[in-house]
Length: 145
Image: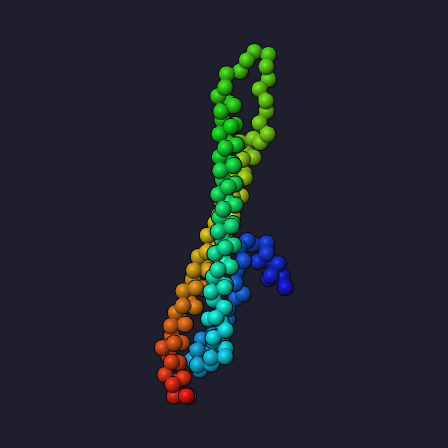
């Protein structure tokens, strides 16, 4: 249960972890009842991941644009000539606060990139295992018929 909570906090929905060793064993023994559900669930898993990753990337992009706009406003205000006896309005956020927000966004981006990289590797592994299963077990189905 803590693992599911971590996934909810971590960002895009990650598919349930696959026991690749057990999958390899099932493929070696052409155990269709064990192997086919893993492959059948793959399209839904990929669809859910890409939707969640897209949403996270869109949020990061929007926040980057907002931060850039705020930073530009702060700099523009600093360049305006000051009128005598008029105190310029203090920006809502300082450059330092915006820099910290930018660092947080960079951390989110790196985490999302890592999740994407792992998902790509997982997908490649499933695709290769599916190909191997089809090559190895196609002939055993014909023999069983």
